[in-house]
Image 1 (cartoon, rainbow, N blue to C red):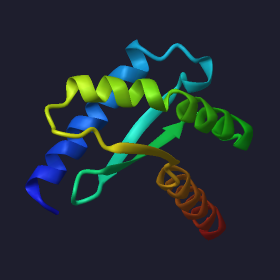
Image 2 (image 1 turned 45 degrees about the horizontal axis):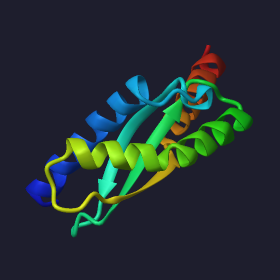
Image 3 (image 1 turned 30 degrees about the vertical axis):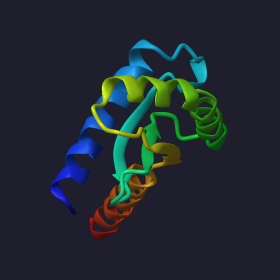
Length: 116
C-alpha cells in the first residue's frame, strides 16, 4: 500500500465519522460507525465500510439506504475538508468482520461449555 493512499484512507475515515455525527440528521444513520476505508491507487474511488450496533437485517438495510441517500452531502463535505485534487466517488458497504468475530466467539464459548 502506498503511503499517500494510506493517509487518504485514514483522513476519509476520520472526516466521514465527523460528518455523520455533526451534519447528517437522518435517524437511519444514527448508530453507524465507520470501520474502514479502501481507496483505489488513483484516488478515484473509495469504499467505506460501516457497522451498526443492531444485529437485525432490516436495520442494516435502513442504514445502507440512509448512507446512500446522504452520499451527496458526505462527498461534498469531503471535498471541502480534504486537500486533494479530486474528491473520490464513495460507496458504502456493511463491514461483516464484526459479525464474523462475534460468531467465532460464540463457537469458542460452545466448545468450552462442551469440555466442562
